[in-house]
Image (cartoon, rainbow, N blue to C red; front, top):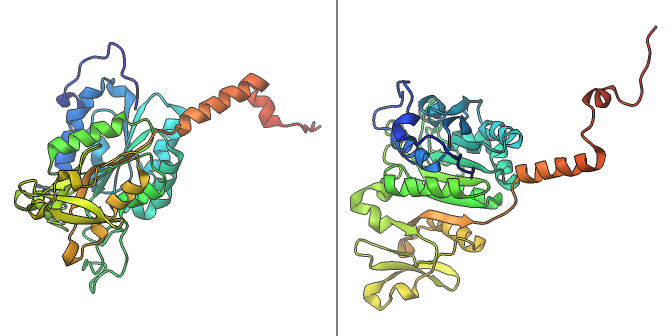
Length: 344
């Protein structure tokens, strides 16, 4: 989170739109995400020049062209590395990383986990469409097993990454999930991500209507959303269903679905606690266990939020501490070293 700029000009969403033609496929979920980001940016109270969007490679990575702030379209998988360097040297800036499931979890997987464990105050927006869209439909690190694609004509053998679980395993201090087709919820999660002091990781389910259409349809469509998705809120029980008539409770340490018509109520359900990392891990992995007898809903919201010193704050504290002991130093002297030869 960056401190609002005193006396900053009041901006609107239109101020953050550029004159560039938005070149995504018609119907792509990226349009909605772009709209929601532009909607929340004026609420931050920052100058446009104090906000930076950095992307890697992929459809989502065109984002900096379409957002009227500073930005950089960097290289494949390295957006998190570039953003880390920027935040280390310019900690006063609000730095956002826009990436995809392929960019961040395949070639960029190593960089992603280290940004999270170091806890730079950076907002990572991971657009997850479970496919490589820009390169025309190969399977990605989040594609389900047995996924038939151009690169896996007989079905993928890979076990997929669970982005939220991966982020929690990397000791991220903020992990959340939202979707492109719920603008109100996505705006809430974007604001929560920004307000967190530290590395925030927001997974956004994003529909690729060309190469993986409907991958998340049961969670986004009106006919099935209330039955298949549970929206988690700190201090509130996990209740869902068309008539809010179902809940999730623990049975011998495992989450199970209960029906209120069978004598259960909201008071019997699991109460969400954003500060409980074990609970967050269980919620992140709930959809990994879809047996017919205990079909669990997919959680959306903030899984985990914890306060921990940021890397850039500790870095600059260390620099000032050493300077206090040894002085500002002399770069020329440092480069010349202790041994000097005179060449005649």
